[in-house]
Length: 147
Ligand code: ZN
Image 1: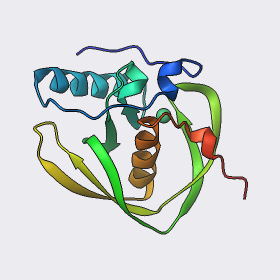
Image 2: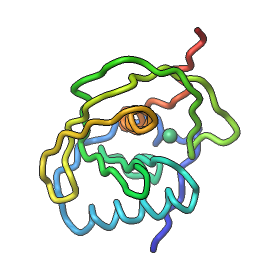
Image 3: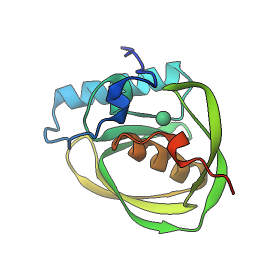
């Protein structure tokens, strides 16, 4: 188990656009494993690579007792909406309401470079949107919903 430091709001890393993952190698697997550990230790529900200082397009999202690994993710379908509170491991002492789709489909790769399409609903859909936003330097409160 290896924990990584979680970058905090105010650091330019969190406002940077990430580059695609191109190598599905041991280094990537180690990064994903470390991100799982770091997220669990911090009691988070998701973590994106820039939050641990890596400007690549990948994130992990907790789904029950399992994890979704989103590598080079693209949301290809959205349905419905949900309005609810969000917070972030990189933004201490702040939460706000954000509107997200209720259901979505994400095209992404797994850690071995296989292309996947994952359907996510409810909280998982919200978490996927939040983490994918991180890859483009967007933080949840940029999209605060004010009704
Ligand atoms: Zn976040």
